[in-house]
Image 1 (tube, rainbow, N blue to C red):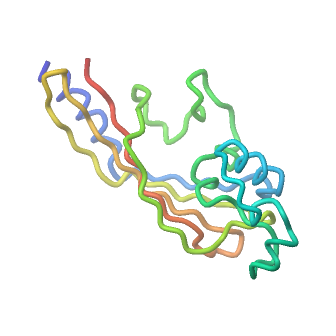
Image 2: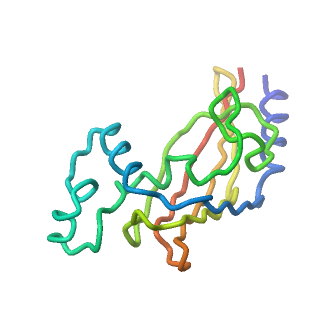
Length: 163
């Protein structure tokens, strides 16, 4: 079992430092805000009601905070049978599972924003276990609008299970 863990760890470790930048092919848009807020059952009117958003000090409705981190809307390409962008980061690894996110929000995402995501594999480690072990992979992702303003920083932790 240890050799399978080590082999997977070496494959994942080879991705350390890999970077990619993706710019959305279009603006975020109000409809996406409404659909996402409904899907996550967060009915705050600042996401859907322009008058309410303006009374709250915004110039327009804003995106639910995690939307920009949880959508492939910014990715211009095909989605594979596992639901991931085809060729994303060209990692050539098994499908990972999400272990968690650490979000830091700087500015609201607006309907007219065109998003650029800068992604880097920032850390890799392993943990042996009776069940076979886990390999963890950490991504640092920064999201910017068309003006270069930092909107959100997300540290996303994924893991691969050795069977």
